Each structure stands twice: as structure tokens, then as C-alpha cells.
Image 1 (tube, rainbow, N blue to C red):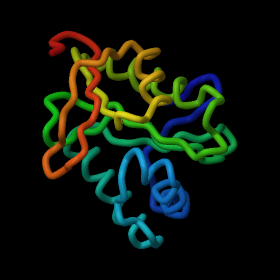
Image 2 (spheres, rainbow, N blue to C red; image 1 turned 45 degrees about the vertical axis):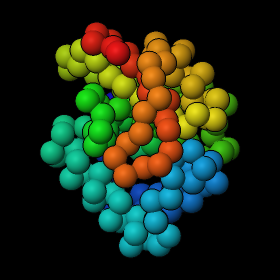
Image 3 (cartoon, rainbow, N blue to C red; image 1 turned 135 degrees about the vertical axis):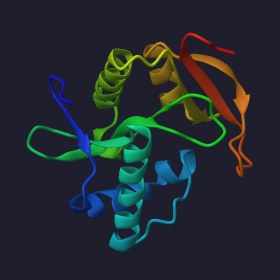
Image 4 (cartoon, one colour; image 1 turned 180 degrees about the vertical axis):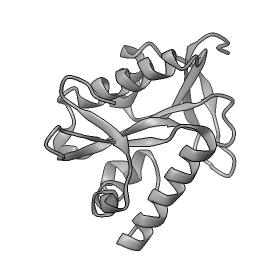
Length: 166
């Protein structure tokens, strides 16, 4: 998938160094959670799980990069236990935030989801993640309720987009 400034593609084994860096960014740890990815081998396993989910569900997180291959972040639809709908997820390295990349990538993912016939999507965010809340609202998501994912103590804000909202 391409946008005027970005390319979105499936993760590959060569993306492991980027994954280690992104998943250990303080904001990732604070707002998304510790995935235990510390080494290139851990990152390789994370990438394999993402690719397996893509095969199983038909979608997953994509690498977002500039046309020259500079990695910026991740964006895509994922399936989470405890959520009835596919979930929009995104995260970018600190130096690439505030430049409109997340909005551009997410808009492309949403356009693709619309073309594929998704009637409804959701998104979750920590209650104190103001930038993500603002972006979701700009993308047409509306806050619906607080929720907890299975096995997670944190109450998250659940947003919905499309038919069938709570």
C-alpha cells in the first residue's frame, strides 16, 4: 500500500532491529505495554507472530516507511482477544511523530478496510494517551466506553467507527 509520502508493507525478518527499538521506546512501554522484546531473536519471534496473524486473519501490523526505506513506525489492523471487531493499531518512533505520518498511514489502512467491506472497526488506547485519542477522533472514531482486555488490569478507552457501535 502506498500514500503520497509513505509505503506500508508486511514486516520482514530484516526489520528486527527496528522492532527492538520501537517496542522499547518509553512511550510504547507506557501506552502499549512491554512485549518482552529485548533482542533481535525476540524481535524475530514478534515478526513471525505478526505474519502468522496476517495469514490467519488476513491483516496485521505493517511497517510504515518513507519511499527510501527509512522505517517510521507500524500501522494496521489487528485482532485482539476480547474485542469483537478488528482493531486499528499504530505506533511511531519519537522523531517521526507530529509530522502527519500516523494519520496518513491510518487513513490508508482505513480506506483499504472500507474497500474490503469492513462494516465496523475499533481502536483502543490508554486513558492518558491524548495524542492517540485526538488522532482517532480525526479519523472518524468515536469514544464508546471503557473496557479491559482479557488478562489486563488497565482500563482502556474503546473507540468505534462504522455500523454497530455500542
